[in-house]
Length: 400
Image 1 (cartoon, rainbow, N blue to C red):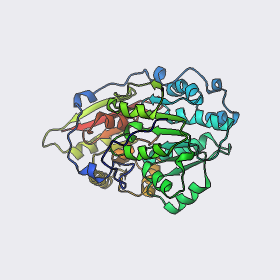
Image 2 (cartoon, rainbow, N blue to C red; image 1 turned 30 degrees about the vertical axis):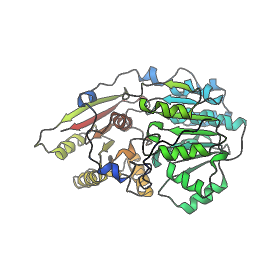
Image 3 (cartoon, helix red, strand yellow; image 1 turned 90 degrees about the horizontal axis):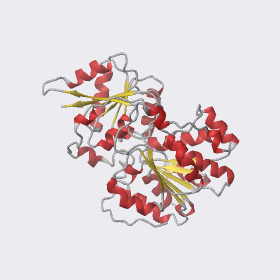
Image 4 (cartoon, one colour; image 1 turned 135 degrees about the horizontal axis):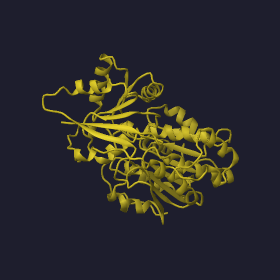
């Protein structure tokens, strides 16, 4: 495999690793690149033909235990990204996969990789999955464990905000798959606990974010040490054409799948804007909105950690059960906030973009952007938290 050249000068901020690329981003004043008129769109019904295939998982001739675990999860038919990618991934080809959130991208790379492990179990640490956020790493770990229940296949998850001592012990025990955020993975490798040179498969999930200015140097370091790299998989809901030359240094003759264009939002979400006059009470309008009975499970996005704190406190004081997550919160706090939201103990989860990727929560009815997102990429990932798995969702964006 070709190694990528280190031509990027700015180093990632370690403390902000896997969240918003550190404090500088939240402090830097920026102007949104989005035309608000593009955020008004009705959902379509094409999800049934666009996301779900007519095949059965049984047609893949999977290991019996893996198939049982898939069916236990309630999955009967593969999604389009899963169906179209299985053969190429099982055969060991490099791949670029672009599909909207909620269409089964995690299963698309885990299922063929697990099937390969069942047929030819190799030494520990054969597959490395790198993700931009802690929440996405935990989701990949959870999905792998549910798919391999009782199969004696093991995964280790390494993310910031957790005990380094425990991670060192876990890393030295070995696993078939390692998943984590770049900063913690490199820390462990530098301590000799993880050996990238022993790994043959690299998966970059949400690769558009992984290859941005905040993460690219860490990815280059890991790739340069993967001397046995035989297969590279890139998955995301969006793709930046400017990254194409960099992507081409990572993959060789890749099998490319585009279930979505990579530049537009999911078609299972009704989208609308809420325009505000200069003297209108923005929070009052938000409160009136979410007090509607149809707003059963809401993720509210804000641009800064400080605003997330303020909105969550104001909602709680107004009688709306809410939680919050952002990069300054400990991992235990973030896990607890997400779990309470999943269980319905809170109705609103207020978050920065740390929640835009990797949070798979069923039945989120609404996504609200309290401010216009900075980029369309950010907007696409945010509203992808609703309208998942064939359900219809609703997204509102406040525009001053």
